Length: 89
Image (cartoon, rainbow, N blue to C red):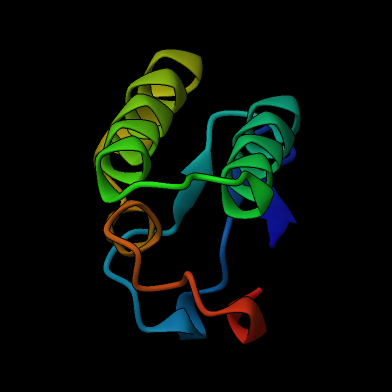
C-alpha cells in the first residue's frame, strides 16, 4: 500500500492483479474499513442468518465510510468472503 501525496488516497501497487488501485480515499478511512472487517472476522455469529446479516451490514457501513470501496474489485473479494481464510490477511 502507498499513499498518494497529493490526494492522501490509499493505493495498492499495480502488481496486485486487481483492475483498480484505489483502496480508500484516505489512510484513516482505510484503517477504519480494515478494523471493521477484522471485527467481523472475530465476531461470534452462531447462525448462518446472523453471519449473512453481519456481512451485509459490514458492506453497508464500509460504503458509507468510504465510497471508494464500492468500485474496487479487491473489496468485492473481501465482502464476498473470498479472503475469510485466516491465512489471507
